[in-house]
Image 1 (tube, rainbow, N blue to C red):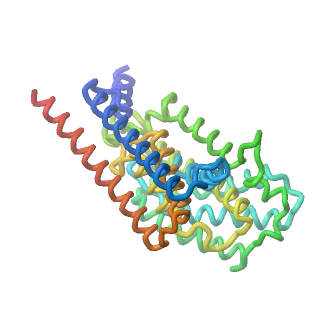
Image 2 (cartoon, helix red, strand yellow; image 1 turned 90 degrees about the vertical axis):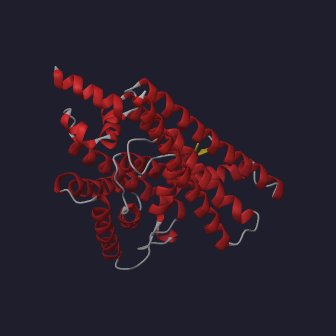
Length: 349
């Protein structure tokens, strides 16, 4: 009974439901941060629309949403990883490997059902995530070291599987390419898949005990362990989820661009991490919201679409995105400092 009481207390702290004061302060800062991010998005849209009236057309908005879908899917998994104080630098290589294997399979078997291709990519990514989770949770290797090492392993396997060659559009059946280009009720399939994943993720982190345990492990791993939470199992789980989502994204990526290459999505993990940071996910662990990472991914998607439309140089595009990300990191640090200062002052009182 005592162990259960301690576990519930740890979960309450991990999800921000411990002390009422801490909850109120954190909620206010989180709401302010998300409203600020939404305001930035609105201002950017208005500014770009003034410069280029074709920006806010339905066709362009649909393109932005479709182009942001894969980034959004990966951001869900990365959020869970970062909440547990981890990081995954291997997702670009995992995406390439799963996409390549799916592409080679449909090339050899053109009649393969698209759903089977999706499941194949998901299974490959899941296996990659299980391996990384084992190294982090069971072996005890630091996440940045484990994922950096496996990034090279997965990238090498991709080149080995393909023999260093590409799988191009004409080698893929139309049914496979329609996974990403098709639509359901007039909505692009990528957007539909992303919405479903976000809905499942929201339910997981908000309404399940395991989801609350993820936050508890990130908030205070030692207390979570003492209270009876199996921290190693949670760590293994989040990296496995990250791998599965990356495998799914790999198939969607190859289907969308109709091309599978050895260097596919090279460096893409940085964009995913940036979306999480912009969305308010704390690198220190323990905090992050689904609504935040949606806004972070949307902001990056809008920037990628808007800056070329107003003829901003590619060099300045990188500079602008980098400055926005840096500003978000500084802001999150100031927010955390403010929360800690207020909690300290109230404890003294």
